[in-house]
Image (cartoon, rainbow, N blue to C red; front, side, top):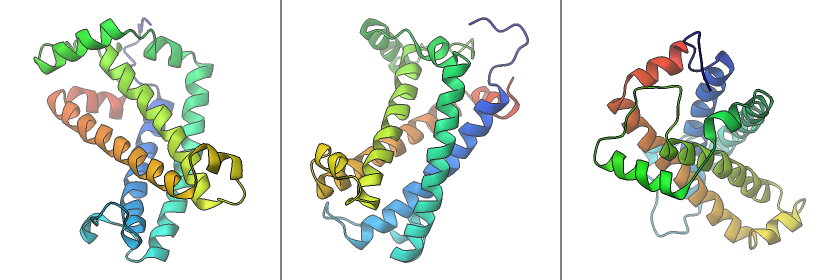
Amino acid sequence: MANTNGLIHPLWVRITHWLNALAVIVLAMSGWRIYDASPFLGFSIPAYLTLGGWLGGAIQWHFAAMWLLTVNGLVYLAANVISRRLFDKFFPLSLSGLFGDLSAALKGKLSHADLNQYNTVQRTAYLFVMLDSVLLVLSGLVLWKSVQFPLLREWLGGYEAARRVHFFGMAGLVAFAGIHLIMVALVPRTLLAMIRGR
């Protein structure tokens, strides 16, 4: 997708990106506090990494951020589809391209000369985040309104299984965010592009 005016990220991309980042931070930290109220993996999250102070407070933060992520995510997806950015930026995908770009990245030889073009690793990672966010919303609906979504609950393997799906889905999102921040530190002009658009 050629860009003649130097714009890398339109304003709507930048706004939805930063709102999603805020939502994910609040969801992760409040979710860890909720998890600590009834841990199922044999460990707890340190209190200083959690948000809400107590279970009720954490749930309030979690619900507020849940709506932000859901509405903002729907706006992001709709704008991507309508503008055709979804198809232009994130496709095509291929296993050979993924392994080639991953190999180059691990060797420190993956080019970031043109910020308008996503490499296959980026495309795969961003598509993972989109799909993972959908899974988080669906599993979150089961945890929030289990009786109202019986088919969804059964599809996810029951309430406790949905709880694990939700936890590991968020762990995947947090892992992506960590890698994303490392990559931004290695290529800082990507941060400037996400702030200024150019």
